[in-house]
Image 1 (cartoon, rainbow over the protein chains, first blue to last red):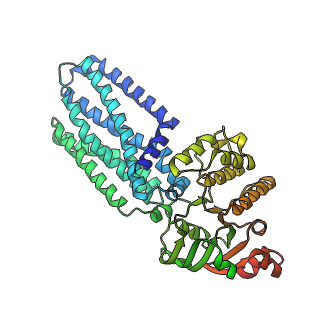
Image 2 (cartoon, chains in turn brown, orange):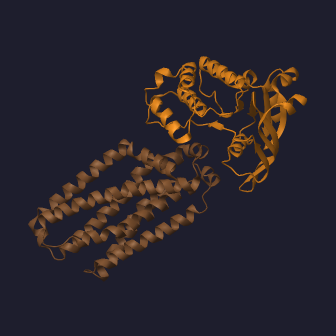
Image 3 (cartoon, rainbow over the protein chains, first blue to last red):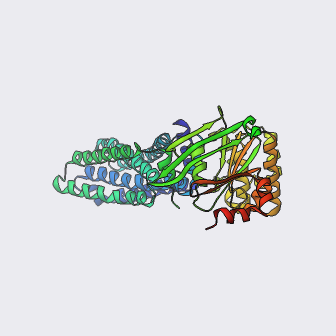
Length: 230
Length: 233
């Protein structure tokens, strides 16, 4: 599996699109946070701690999904649509190891991104709003990681398993709506209660991961090659 | 026939059948690929050539029959499409191939093949700038990096100019002389006449002719005539 992981990581880190996306993401998040935190009215609003934690969650969701899409353009999606996956498989790459390698590579890179966004939030929060502990932000990290594992494993399995790979793209686009709907519902039911939202994120992550594993169980060279588009 | 039995077999297909989604793609396919031989797999579109290649490389599982390979046979495939890493230079493509697919060809040989195929000037350039023919030749070069005993070439001459065709053909002959088995698929029957020692004609997943090229040409004016006669609809 290490060969497949190394291959995917090399393809990601050498991609210009990925490097540009990273710089842009950090820039956008920093700029947005600066604009919000320098507003004194914003700092006076009730439940600010919960609001900031939720904002971190939503931002991280958005970037997990956007990043996964970016990464896919130069890795698994490209390999599948161009047909190079056949060359990889006929030269010693194993189907399930390839799935695991792609999933872990996507996961590693998106986790790095989440941690960078997290630090961005922490720095602003500590600078402008030092009295309240950052436990709300820290507690969001674990459910987010589970969500990330779920998204990575399911989307990699889908890309390898289906012919119409644009479905995987659509799933990635649809997921934020599912998350926002759940978040909105949770906020209505329990406006002050953050753990409910985190539990929902955690549960969605586990569900997506289970689905990914289920789809990947049937992966073999034949099913991958016969579903190469075109 | 006696000569056939004493020659070293690289790979042997015995009554191989393959069904995909209920449709029989290959039916009782039996043939051998020998070392020091250029074997051409020809046939109409959808006859089962690519499926045969995929079964040989192990990408597809066969439903019945057997594929026997020589012990620790090293196989390399040049696919129908060019699978170059487009954003990388020629040098980087070679490095990537070595790193992940285990190339073991000496540098002198790589330099020789690069020169022979007229690729030297393209090595520092990014692969997306290559023409179709250059990409094809580069794919051929990559397939040689693992120094395979059996080389499978899917439409190797597509998009090549006459000089490149001749150079590629000469290189294929050299590889054969060095003891390698070569299995090529092609729709270009004139090229098969020039290149192959033996051909297998497949239609609807069945072998309808397995013969030496010179023998077929003693009965037909060209392979194209034979093709129309045997596989024409």
